[in-house]
Length: 75
Image (cartoon, rainbow, N blue to C red; front, side, top):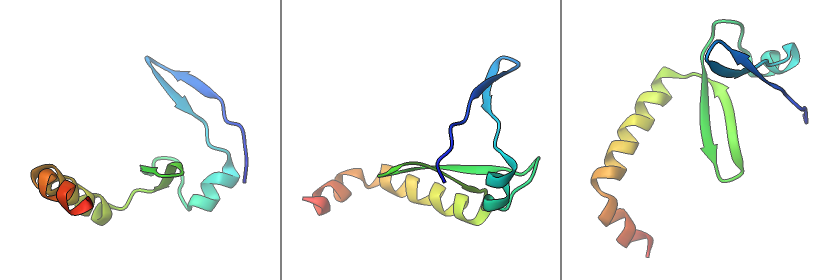
């Protein structure tokens, strides 16, 4: 699906309106939360998963703490 979306002013913030078809594909509805993921191919939107979010928080903490070790392993 390729679709152009427009950024809209929402108070002092900026938002984007997601069309009904996209909401159905994401299986979300008004009031649900989305997770924004940065991928090698760009940005991905997924339904918010609290378990996955907790796992990502732990992974980020480990990566920050063990940055030098991970850098050496990547060499």
